[in-house]
Length: 261
Image (cartoon, rainbow, N blue to C red; front, side, top):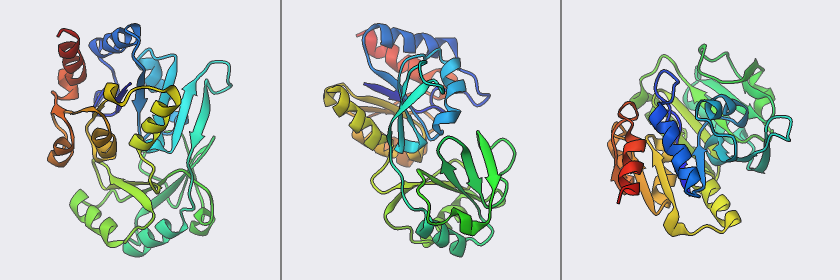
């Protein structure tokens, strides 16, 4: 089983995928490997990426591990949701608003998009977003909470998130003043482990590639884990190995080196 993060790992900053990356995926699939993407993106936002990579079958970890889908064109959306983990976001939303009164908040709603406290900056959310009263976001079952402050630097933002004292959830800071919050014990790693067990695949054959803090658990989980060349040092420290940056085709270079042995 080989799992790739998307943004900053397989997808370039301009939203494209190199031909070398696409050929690497095809080569792995032809060799019989279970190849899948593991992303923070929601299930409805993953299809354009799959098309760019010419991936038409298999599985995808979405929403940082809260959702696992199986690609199948016989379903209206082109996939079947085979696992979804949800939680009540009330405590997290209240804690974040108290720590950061002006923060933008959102909850991920299955089969729709996001309900948000205020409109997020253009281009930052994929899918629908609907502005609702804060109280409407409480006492629901959701698979993810997001919080964003476009006017704050990432260090100050992280400090405030830590001061919020979030409990019984998993959270990860993004590349900007952004945090993803998932149900307790849910991560890309937990979804990959569930799929590994479903498919009865050996742990010794697991490989993961990632570049950010939301990849931390799956880098620790895999038998062989690879951090991208521009990953934060803390993320690199969790991985078994390090490769080049995404714009240097770090993933294909590493895979080719393994296959040539």
